Image (cartoon, rainbow, N blue to C red; front, side, top):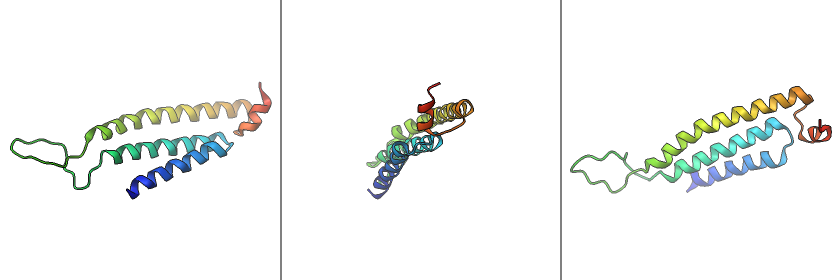
Length: 112
């Protein structure tokens, strides 16, 4: 229960960074923190205390097995999340080259 609460707290830290900060790089970092907190929550959903790997062997009846589906989904999401983070940072660099600032409020004023 405590790791799940810590993952939710990590998500809230990322949400704070995304909602309050006005720097594009800090917003990207906040989004990444939220993304990895979500991955952690999904991995914790599949965890079972004292669970065994889900490898079925004939004649052995295990009652507590770890669910492999959330882990597989998280591995897939990490790859796509890395690609979206790289795209977000490349867009931020292009905006910096065009406007000379990472500040969202300054970019809104320029409108060019």
